[in-house]
Image (cartoon, rainbow, N blue to C red; front, top):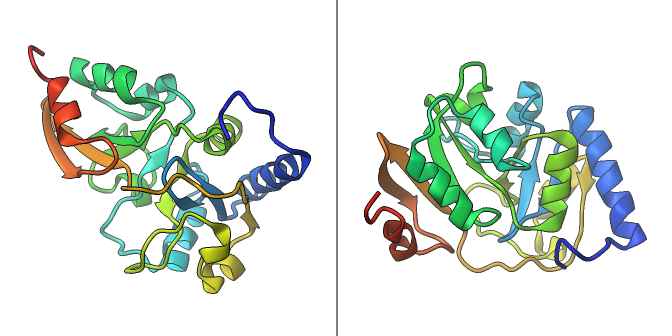
Length: 208
């Protein structure tokens, strides 16, 4: 499914329900450009805490965030080097999470290190959710220590029973997870090499 294709009625209903649950402080399962993810509105710290509890996620690992567009990302970061703008232009929407200093006031669960990891998803469902609800957490929909899933039918039953809504859009692309890139004073540190390979990222720094 691409962003230019209309959603079937059943998927529209599932997205509408997910938006309502997110607005109410709920936790959902939704598709991304790699795997299915657990999501909660970043504006709701209690929902983020609940998400971490459902997943069994370590409290010292900040959650990455999906934003609807570059403009939102720029508002959530306090410092954005020029190379970050180049990377956003080159790889967004897509599976590149960029970690930069966070603006003050973001929830502990996404920014307790003083930084926040953001990306614009290329999956049309994730895009629509972020456009309608604002930034959403993007933790993979698996129990801590287990592998990621590309189909709702493969998800752990305990996860399915714990969340408030599930948006089933069929199989996601899978493959490697999103690449996570930290920029410190404009210098790259790849925290996780995923779909976007190191060489493609390093090419953006040549001459920068």
